Length: 142
Image (cartoon, rainbow, N blue to C red; front, side):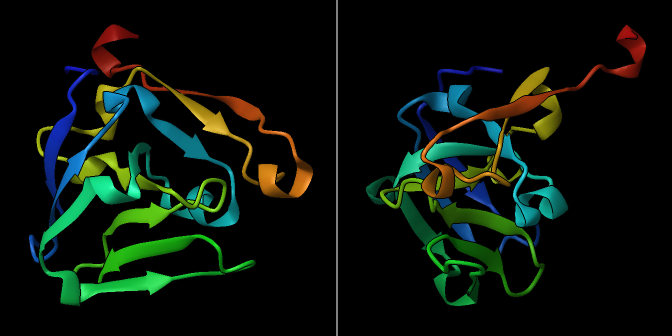
């Protein structure tokens, strides 16, 4: 896997929502979060600026979910239910892009993922903290 890839295409599970994204940090920005929504959805997200995401098909099928402060906007395909991206609460000029939607990328391609403390959100506490590290060890390597 090329962690430095900058341009990628992506789609939801059913292919209705399709997009192209420029990733300023490539896949090196991959993170998880401990907030209530991220705990339940379990996705790994990478960073893109708002102007760096282009929905190429299915914009009308996207639905948006917000909670708590309403600052973060989480987008899902209304047909298959897959989370594709979200506008971040911590930095409203950025999107988090679901790596599982990126062509040729699997969340299981990452041996380690930093997990940010979203329970104690930096916008509430003033401090950005790492909650831990999530590791994937393939069965044939254990």
